[in-house]
Length: 210
Image (tube, rainbow, N blue to C red; front, top):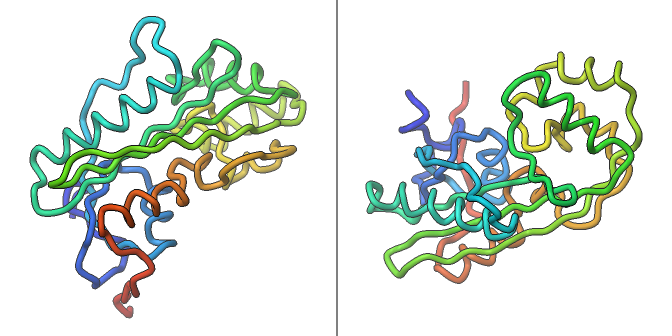
């Protein structure tokens, strides 16, 4: 089964939602609040526009993902999200390579940055969206630590080159905001959008027994 047709891992419950993302973290977070779903990764250009404000950027991309998948997936509501790490005027997405990933970690070392995650829901009634803003303080890290962390493989597909829910947690000194938002899908905002659209959560997700 490909990512384009995958249901909630191990679930036998009928899907009530389509997730426009291949992110395993977003899938796990939807499972956490009892939302059985299909996965339809959105294929769009995620590059930031020239001088585009960071909050406008993540909101635009999340909406575009939801609408792109909704254009072909008409049977279910479509949920999509986009996350960016913001430090001053710099916006960090997923690092392109080792050098960029380690440079991101160096820039974030010992400083507080914002994590912006926009979530969008496309239904037959239209498009709604919400924004989660969190402040994360990372402790100072050494060059050796940053290199070792990159070499674990964890930072490769993470905005800002770290995962708060993984090995990167050892760098996080404090968090003001949404833990799930920093992971990539703010559950408070997500539940608000789902509830307003009549999409149920907290449903039992039966799992196939081995």
